[in-house]
Each structure stands twice: as C-alpha cells, then as structure tokens.
Length: 437
Image 1 (cartoon, rainbow, N blue to C red):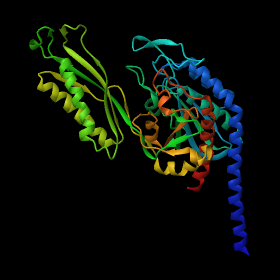
Image 2 (cartoon, rainbow, N blue to C red):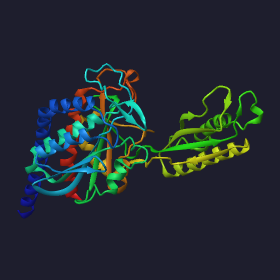
Image 3 (cartoon, one colour):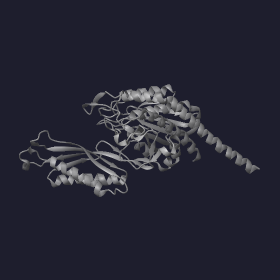
Image 4 (cartoon, rainbow, N blue to C red):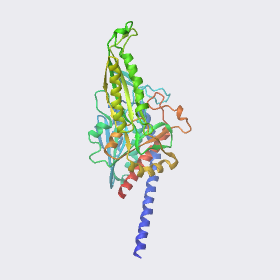
C-alpha cells in the first residue's frame, strides 16, 4: 500500500511539473504576442538612430529607462556604455544571463527601408555613414521584450535573470577597450555569479520561424593583423634602384593563401586567412618606401590558430627578406576573439527548449561557421549557448537576401517574436533542469 502511495505521488508530481511547464510556455507565448508590436517599434527606432561601438549613449538610455519602468535593478556605464538589468524572481533558483549587443557599423544603408538610417558620424578620424547592418538593433529590441515578459512573470520566476546589453561587439574604436572582453573584465558575470548564459544572433539568410545551433565550436575565433612591408623608394622609371614594397606585398598576399590550402587539415575544421586592405604609394610613377596590409585570421580550434599565426609571421618575414625588404607582423593587431564554444552538456539539455519554441522541424543543426562573435568571452567563463534566429522573409531565396555587414542587409520584423519566446523558455526550462542536477 505504501509503495502504491509513493507511486501515485510521484506520478502526480510528473504530471504537475509537465503541466506547469506547459502553462509557462503558453503564458510566455501569449505575453510575446502582446509585446510584439513594441519590440518592432523599438527596433525601428534604434535602426533609425544607430550608434557605433562605445558610443551607444542614446540606445543605452532607451534600454535603462525601459528596464527601470519594469522595476528591474539597473546598472549603467558597464564596459563604457553597457547596461545590465537584474531581475530577481520570487522563487529560489539559478542566476541566468541573457545577452544582446547594441552597436552599429560604419556602413551606408541602401535597402529602401522607410526607417533606413541617415546618420553620419566620425569613425577613426573620418566621416562615415552608420547603419545597423548586422541586426544588433533587433537583438536589443528582443531582449527589451524578454525583460517585459519575464518581469510580468516575476512571481513564477525561479532564480535571477541578468540582462546584458553589450556595446562594441564589432570592436572598440582604435585605442579603446570594449565589448564582451571589457564587460567580463569589469565583473558582469559576478555579483550575483552567473551560472549559464544564452545569446542569439538574427540571420538574414535563415528563414523566419527557424533556429539553428551547433554544440562545441560554433563560430570561429578571429584575430585581425597588420603587416608593414618596408622597402626602398625610387622613381617609377628606375625600379632597379628600389626595393619595391608593393611587389613584395603582392607576393606575400599570394603566399598567405597557401597556408589554408596546404597547412590546415580542412577535413577537421575550416580556416580563413584574408587580406582586406592594402595601402601604399600615392602616384603611378613613384615606388613608395612602405606598404601596409590589414587582414583577418579565422579558426575553429586553438591548435589551428597557433599554426596559422606562426605561418603568417614566417611567410611575411621570409618573403620580404628574400627580396631585400623587411616585414613587421602585428598579430593580433587590435582584436582577438576566441572560438564561440557552445557547452556540449548545456546545448544537449536545452535542445528541447529550442524545439518547443520553434517546433522540432524548425530547429536546425548546422556546420560551424567562420564568422566570429565576442559572446565567446562569456562562454569561456561560464557554460554558454549561442544560437541563430531566422530573419529572412518566408519563401525568399537566401542567395538574394542582403548579407550581414552590407548596405543591402535587411531582416523581417515578424522574426522577433520567436526570439522573445525562445529566450523566455530557456530561462524557465534551465531553472527546471538545474533542479535535477
């Protein structure tokens, strides 16, 4: 009789817990419906008023005022312009962090949107147009919506949620620190100590209603570099009197491309070595004294990064030496982002939450990508899960969708509600999972 009683109680608890989870999900979905138009309006407003890294003053004020209106504890000027909100649930539970990045890019918008940016500002000493060409405006608006939904469910919330609104994901201006690295350095994951962190990135070439993810190495580690080739100048009519740094730089560029094709085991991981800028000389009949090259390295393992770093230095220095020139390699130059690594156990336990949010058929396991994300700095310190949110209109060909970091970048407003729902489900589901451990 006693065993039967225990069995009935256990069965009741299972059904009760399942019912609670279902009720939370239903309430989250209804709340997301209510907040959707606000999220869209916030996104349009932020999109029309973009700000570069470490300059997100207006955006930060908008966020702080909204969080304060919800009764959430707010800290400002974290990591220069970052905002952190702390929502304490009425029930005991873990500390969970949710992150959104705030900064725009020095890009001129050319997509015909009625709320397109017309903003211009100074960037590294030059006037530039500014555009949210990567979707960070959507990330901010989504997390503001999540804060409103979770604040309305405070009595049911187990534990504490930290809302991290981060500046300068694309990199701080020259001579400044910023981004996730600086926020971690300033203690954003402490007081209270974060147990797990979740982040999303909208994707302009993934259909609305979809989520994509990958356990372990999801996005590449990235480092920029600068190579300065110094030669001997001369009149362009007498090249034999020179040590031509332009010719040497050209040879270095060609040789650098052989690192990936000949030194990296591409069946294990992808890798990239790209030269994105070459600057040297000012006239066609003058061979200059030096040439500067700027580039990026992308890898999906620490071992590949070390190999490529060594080979870039070796190729540049020895190629220059063979020509009688010198090459100075600065690698990393201004940034180094580690591999964005999704904690394997966390990803496995939260997969059901992603599937519940979007539907099993809409949650896609994808290969690693060579884009990078400074969310990696958080995930180095605590278990993290970073995933992609579809932002492309249904039925559109991904090949015709405006890519990230381009003037044609565009995302569909109907994408944002799923972002709100997914973040909220992750919070409640992680709290339930943490009780089992």
